[in-house]
Length: 571
Image (tube, rainbow, N blue to C red; front, side, top):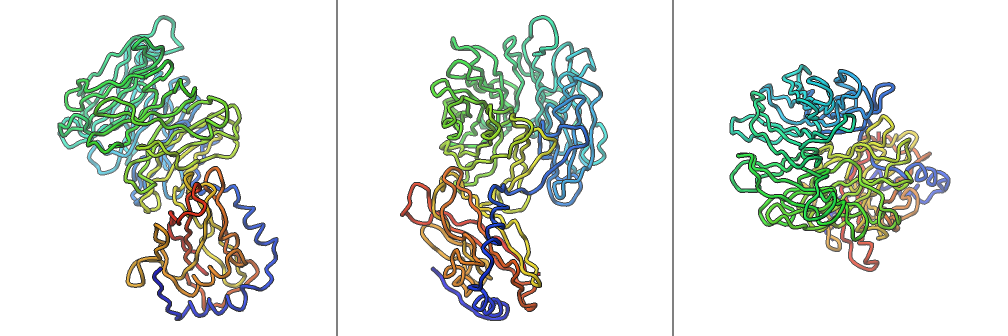
């Protein structure tokens, strides 16, 4: 362990105060109350609230920075009729704009996408699908392309007959080489409101510059719901142009029933590169799709689909090779398996930047059950399928999870945040940081408590942890951190570090060592100075915290995780 002790200025004053006060009788109820308030806490970054009488949370998409404040904003759609798509500030959750539906039963907002500029004003624009809009007859469907700067309509694409255009929408990159991002939309021809047989689904790729059709894809099988999902997958065929994948979950192939199919289509030519078919009855490959990048590091982008596994009789997500169409891994929730119910996966699937340090994206999978207490989202490694994190929302009016999506990196730490909803007219955005200070500052005049959420993840469930304090974060000339076990604590060793070690689990260091939850690897801790005034000379001092943790399966093993460092400021 590298040690750099420089007892100067604020450090001396704070250390002297700790020597006098740390072992003083601090009411036990104070520490207990502090931790009780956060015992079930999830680390929330932002909560988005819908308009009165709305039910926002049906769909979520990162919109890109629309208001120029440097933070990506949010698109959220209503899950009820007549429907609305609301744009929220990613900074403070305020409403920037609302796009209302043109009427009842239009499916307005069933599919939304953002984050790419097509009109050349350097502000990302917005796609909204309304699969049942009656612009050209009941069920014809529409896709609306709106400016993210003025909110005005750039163009509108209408389906024909009962085409259900707008069942899915996605930006797909510049496929025609004109320097403008193009976009795609699915038309499933699958409408339960209309009499008569279904037809074969289709999909369209449109020029971002002109709106002209670049590729007309399909048709799939009659009733197969070809086009219900779309995703830009990356360059599978190595021609320098990004390709796309299209889902057809209700098709029967290879003698199976509803096993589903995923089509990988060339972005350059529109021709089929590869198809991947479900390996059992009810697999429903293609119901929802996401692009994890190159999960098996073979140089070809892969894909992930919601899928039902007949062997375990549970739902999950299958990671599929973009090169060979083989199944690389199957992701299932241990909570779902332990529940004894097959449950189900929600209508969402997404990926986030690597959280486990291997550089491979992780997969987000939502689960719901008959009991709302075990509905949850799972974050798993796309390469191995290993469960990494649970995100469990508190009980809400609906046990069917709403939106679950990548919300982008809000705090600049290199880790994407996660947006989710439970059908109660709110969307909550959670951080994926391993340590979160839920209290940013402590008043010097009265004292206060800084509370912490620890989220080490499923691999560390039940493992030991130790929260450490310092006045100096790692980096710069001070030090490069404190090596311990197989990791490095992002703090510099000083007198405050010594006190946090010597006074472990003694106020003001409350539950700073122990074992993480045996299921999800979460925990709480506190730095409790309630009723303990600090010297005025400590105003402006930042106290930094970080923790180390062991793997849950190795009680006597090395420390394998070091959290991020979190500051708490004296004011």
